[in-house]
Amino acid sequence: MNKDQFRDSLKEKGIELSEQQMNQFDTYYRVLVEWNEKMNLTAITDEQEVYLKHFYDSITAAFYVNFDQPLNVCDVGAGAGFPSLPLKIVYPSLKVTIVDSLNKRITFLNHLANQLGLENVEFIHDRAETFGKNKRYRETFDVVTARAVARMSVLSELCLPLVKVGGDMIALKAAQFKEEETDARKAVQLLGGQWEKVHTFYLPEEESERNIAIINKVKPTPKTYPRKPGTPNKSPIS
Figure (cartoon, rainbow, N blue to C red):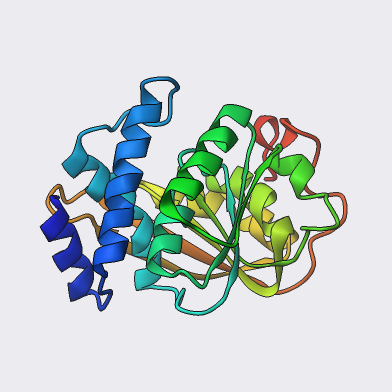
C-alpha cells in the first residue's frame, strides 16, 4: 500500500488526512526504520508494508469505534506505538498513555512523539500487571487498546482493570480469533467486561483476516486483578 493508496483507502472509510498528517506518517516511517537499526521494533520495514500492516491496520479500529472525540486512551504493550499513535495522528484530540515493559521502547516513543509534534501523550515504563494496580490509572481510561500482545484470556486481565466502567477494551487481533474468544469468556465476565461485538474484515491488497473485539466494562474489576507479573500468562483465567 503506497502513500496515495493509504490516503485513498482511508478516505473511502470517511477519514480524510491533511498534508500535515501525511507528513507525520512519513516522519513516523523514517524514524521507525532509523531506530529499528539500533533496536528491535518491527520485522516489517518495507515502506508499503508499514503503511498497510502497521499504519492502516492500526487505524481500522476507528472504522468501528468513534475516536473523533477527546477520549482518554491507554495502549498496553504498544511496542513501536501501534495502534495508538497512528490513531493519535488521525485524531489529535485523543489523550494517549502507552505502557510498555521495555525502557528502550519508551525512549524511542518519546523521541518519536517529539519528532511528530504530538501533545497529550504519556509513555510509562512498567509491566501491565503492576500498572493495573496503580490507583492513579486504574479504571480511569475511556478506551484501552492492545494489538498483538497476548491471547484474549491473558489480555483481558491486563487491560480491563484499566478501563473505567462504561468504557471499552478494544483488541486488534489476527485470524483464528473465535477460539480465543471462547477461551476468554470466563475471564472477561470475571473482570467486569461484557462482549459487545467482534468485527471481522480483511486487510486490503493481501486479504489477510483481522478481528477487532470490543468489550464493554459493565462493573468494576475485583481488586485481586491483575495478578502478579507473569502470572496471567502462566495461568490464564479459565
